[in-house]
Image: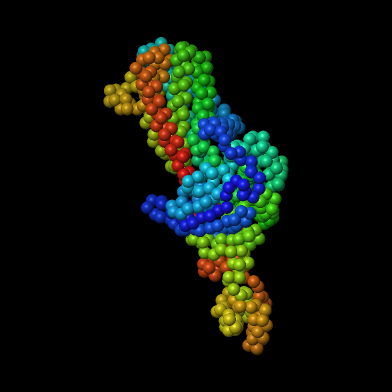
Amino acid sequence: MNTGSRARGGGLARHRAGTRVSALARDTWTVFSRAMRLSLRNPAWVAIGLMQPVLYIVLFGPLLEPLAGRLGSGNAYQLFVPGILVQLGLFGALFVGFALIAEWRAGVVESQRVTPASRTALLLGRVLRDVLVLLVQGTLLILVSLLFGLRAPVAGVVLTLLLVAMLGAALSAVSYALALTLKSEDAFAPLLNAVVFPVLLLSGILLPMSLAPGWLQGVSDVNPFKHIVEGARAFFDGEYTSAAAWWGVGLTVVLVVLGWVFGVRRFRRENG
Amino acid sequence: MIHARGLARTFRKRKQEVQAVTGVDLDVDAGEIVGFLGPNGAGKTTTLRMLTTLLTPSAGTATVAGCDLIADPVGVRRRIGYVSQSGSTAPEARAGEEVVDHARLYGVRTADAVVRGRQLFSDLDLDGLWERQPKDMSGGQRRRLDIAMGLVHDPGLVFLDEPTTGLDPQARANLWGHIRSLREDRGTTVFLTTHYLDEADALCDRILVIDRGAIVAEGTPDQLKSKVGGDVLTVTVADPARAGDAARLVGDLPGAEPAQVDGARVIGRVPAGGPALVDLVRGLDAAGIGIAGVESRRPSLDDVFLGLTGRSLREEGTSPDDAPTPEVVPS
Ligand SMILES: Nc1ncnc2c1ncn2[C@@H]1O[C@H](COP(=O)(O)OP(=O)(O)O)[C@@H](O)[C@H]1O
Ligand SMILES: [Mg+2]
């Protein structure tokens, strides 16, 4: 049909005169603001999301205080907070897929995919919401830690938050892509557990891997999250150009690239 | 508006192949209301998801609203609205916000989307529900909200997948009115699926009957009925033991096909119901068979479906009065 032969006036849909970039930005904003609104609307979710980081510091931090000297650090929180921030990024982002499965079941995913909106925007808008949530949680975690005696350079803290934001962006994209592929909580949950726990235990997030016997350290060396945690600790120690810092940033960038290629490809695929 | 040739889709699940749609040709003109009638599992949803770019066909070509399905899916998406079988809104969202956000994904300005959304809410008897969460709406209200979502960008062509499944008869009749007025007031072309005979009969200019992934008949409801040919005669005998004798008499009527016995009822088909009825009553009387009732009627769409496929659409307990629950999950 050509536009002139339409049975009635041009309709409301504006022809997208703008560039693809501006259409992407607008669609991303629509998806982001919708997702953010839905997150904020659930008071239980907001409370849990804010309590979680506080609980880590309040309930787990004191356990580490007596160990601080043995671990070669004057301040337990300087050692502990970077790991918890990375853990926040890991858990916070990997589990977002559950919400997408619920949305898919309600028909929301299909109703968005039948619009001309950019497929990338459908992913990006959701990921940006997750990243913003992570940043708020991470900032709160740091503020509470300061009350408990954390001392760390401002630049290092900011850099760590950025690192966590990038990590979150990568893992949240992966989580959505997996969720859209599996479309079932019963398949998604075991997969996540199978991945998350080894990664967590071998990452030195809770205790530095330097405490581990040699073989365990060897195994943990192939875990990228261990290096990301060490990079974050280097930032907290003000060692911005140390090898650990570079490794942490480098591996995070690799994860972002891989996660995004995987996520965008899945969202672009037909047969969503 | 829609031209499809050889549209087919095979699903592969663990080496098992399901041929959901085996090759569908269809043409829909601007301004038509066309219905896709078939039992559950016939391939209606799969065809619709192909025509709306949600599913890539395994074979075949189609032009939808002037755009090629494969080469220009975004062009198709811009010009159509789609109301899926399984809902379109998050249970915890607010109805109005979902509608506005949906319009924005079509590039509609927020202010325009609010105006259009509110108009649709009023047209679809959803007044006062703008702030309501879908989880707190009745099934009928949610279904009308889905339809508002599909229409908010004012498309020239809408696809409705089982728009009235799960609604009570009153709500269904109201929704038919809304669908008719879409065409009357806005010139919208409507392509809908249904497994309700009365819905296809009452609403559609033209019906495509689909069974096991293929279109088995096509035409206006009257054309389809006249294809069955003749009239349907039903005799209820006073004594069920004599039903067999009555069936023989019905089958002996001029031009009749062998009659079927169902308890005390005998059902047969004859070229012309009126004269046959007179002959039959005389014959029954002469044979001393007591009559509890006789009826001659025009064939229904169910007779059409029965004649085409050997199965009845009604057998599945899908009559609207059963208020069936909608299928939970699409794939
Ligand atoms: N994603 C899918 N994977 C496998 N089989 C499917 C999928 N979608 C539909 N089918 C099968 O295709 C056939 C047609 O389904 P569908 O198009 O939903 O029928 P209808 O809408 O007419 O009830 C059914 O046998 C159904 O089980
Ligand atoms: Mg269906």
